[in-house]
Image (cartoon, rainbow, N blue to C red; front, side):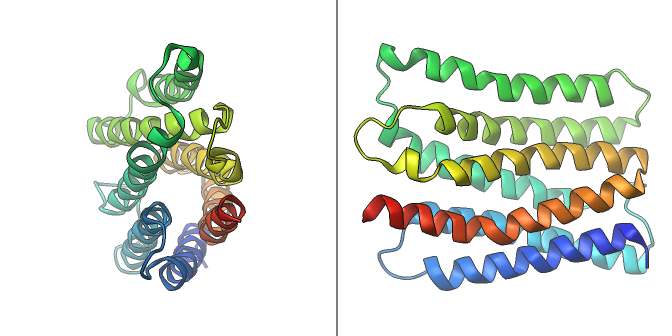
Length: 221
């Protein structure tokens, strides 16, 4: 079987399992909206990978022409960004000057992603459509990565929620990095790297909802 197809099937199946778990656990009255948004992020990946599986089975490739599977990645990153920016960041960061360094240091994440984009896409002979797709992905992964890194290093002042969700933020940060790596490997047709990256992404999508659940329980007990 095609290794690229295997990678996408693994990611798709694991993402659907993770999404179903999150829906059963979090989509109930009085459950955290934060966890619901992360579940939706996993769901976006599940449907994006389902599209890619169908495309591989019918057309036979994901390397040529624009493919809608990338929208699943972008939607996933958007939900991860919205969860931390809209739901969690205000609980920790009150905007005071004493936390300035904790707002500056996380800029390392988007800076690294932008540097990767420039080296592997912008300053290469990649097709214009590939450069655009990679650029859009870089914007979304940078936004999500900034807040994941910020919440990893931010001091837990009063509520304890930042500390309880550190493992989730590590997983989300690794997931964002894998999204960039996957874009690079797909653009270059590196089959082995695509297979490894897809499996790693699938594992993270499988465990991320239970990780959030444990973090929330640790915070509320």
